[in-house]
Image (cartoon, rainbow, N blue to C red; front, side):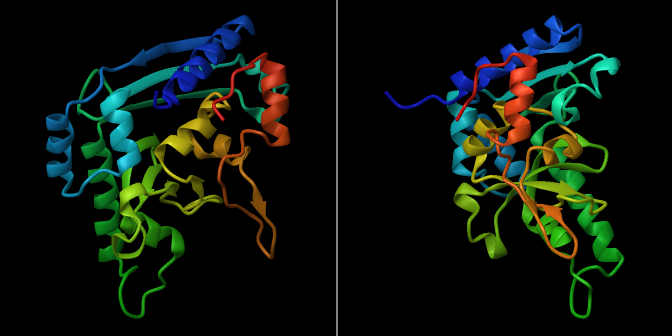
Length: 247
């Protein structure tokens, strides 16, 4: 039988919500999982965005679900006590849009493209332009999950779509904060294995950076991927009382 990694994801999601409540926190949205998507639904979104979705993500959509959401947060007085300050987490994404307040892939992708068009108007691309690596990654990625007003998660297809078939998940931050462009996972399943193992902390990037490796240099920066077995992640699971991991 083929491995179904999402069974481990759901175990992690449900456990962190339970442990959050045990700590006196809130679960503003319990774990909600949409039905799997049909090939016709996937094809419709692909037609709308003008490109094929990466194979790992397509597998999740077809075999697991077309969207998922949950949200948890610890009480304010525990924010300084919880290891790494990892006091909240969750996600909200869906293939179809709009649906029950969730923003679909096509809408997230249009947001990314609108920013790129704005930057093009400012002369940030092309001959003689100062092409920052983060902005180049925004240009060649597909945003599938929004994590805040100025940021989201994308699939990076590489130069000229060279690795689009199983694109890695990257952090996209429009204001170029530390971690912008960092690789969070080798592909969709690898990323979800990693993120679920730390309760899907965030989803704002500041929380994710806490469980990402740092590249030291003149200007230290977080480079990824998410490391669910780093010291902070292990201490956080012990403090929360979470025992499930997805990898």
